[in-house]
Image 1 (spheres, rainbow, N blue to C red):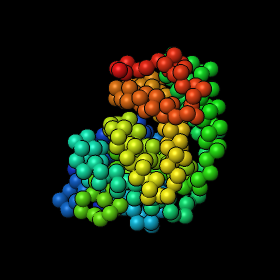
Image 2 (cartoon, one colour; image 1 turned 135 degrees about the vertical axis):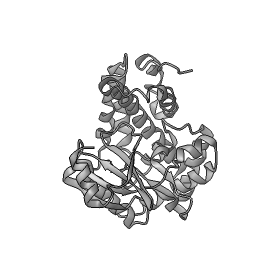
Image 3 (cartoon, rainbow, N blue to C red; image 1 turned 120 degrees about the horizontal axis):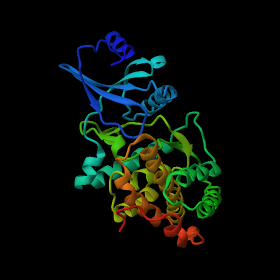
Image 4 (cartoon, helix red, strand yellow; image 1 turned 180 degrees about the vertical axis):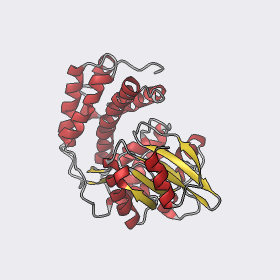
Length: 314
């Protein structure tokens, strides 16, 4: 460990803990589980991404203030990029979904949590426009093999047009609200059963964004029937018009999954992180499903030529 980390742990009283690396994703941040006789904690080392520390602390305070299970901050040295966090355990929601165990309970709890966030007064966060969201998909032009930018420009035109039509009030999106970033806390009640991770990139956007993140998850397969049932359940609970919600879901799913196709290829090309490449067929499938919506009729037929299916797609 670097000297700054050792000094931080010494001042926090955790030098006697056993350190075990926690598997990361595509982030520049590093995580370590610290274990000792009277408990455990998580060390976040964001020295290479200092701006994320302030954002993480701000969102942690907001989430905990509205009664959600974001990890408490035990100690902090933001100038060194270090936080010591409450350990939310080792049972990600993805494990429950992969076995089918209590899947309905998980999705219902997630929907309740998203609706709770939707009802809160939002903190001051970035609020990307429809044009911004559409342009964020440009990463696929740069990194997806044989991508056709002419077709992708047409898709971005549709995305920008449709994103600009939605009139639902923006709310907080945790942005990476997927099953690997949700820990199941069985000893807590209601929506507090969901431990929240990796929300420092939160922004303000349409309420459907995090529902899309959850239900079109690259890492954990969610059957189409379960996705459709969850969308209906969300509409019933929120009072949203179901056809408008389904349209919003399709548009944001196309935007998000198109972007993820580029992100996973960039991670492999620039950082040698190839662990997500086998998930590309699933992401591609979600994109094709999103393009089934009538708003994409003008561009739907060009997808297989402009974006050849990734290896392993059936």
